[in-house]
Image (cartoon, rainbow, N blue to C red; front, side, top):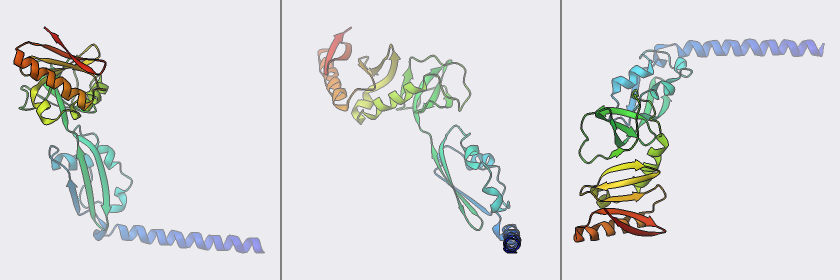
Length: 236
């Protein structure tokens, strides 16, 4: 008899929860609980209509149905979107915070220039190098679709480490960085070169710049390299 009583109570609980769930679903389908507003922040390059198109979530859709759809994955298909955080504000609002990729450098690309981010994502193609932007050469690029990763994407991370160690004065004197045989060659606007790798320190960079400034006064062109921890000038 005790066993039958337990089964009967379980059946009652199951019916209660089914009824409660049905009420919740019914309430969630009411107009008050349908998506009425999408707020997107953090966009400078990405257009709002591009983001909403990727979301594929029309206004008026029940909020409960939004929880299971892969909205973040859809947004991440955009080449400029690095990260996206989605928050549901019940009863009827969705908030999206977007972090965009930034251009690290422009690479030669079949007579044009391809803008590439620090993670190696191809972002856009242009004909001329924008003012104050960095030209990075030495990599052979195949034909790529926007949004694809370039071969040798790990070199872009190394490049970012080097650029981050330059102060504004150092950055202004560099017109191009070229990769060759395991080194990055920093070309100045007046045809001096500085050979570095990603292990270079800020102090070493400043010491190498000091050598360039001195050799300019002597009007001797050449390349500055590190031997041990000391900069050495190699005349052309």
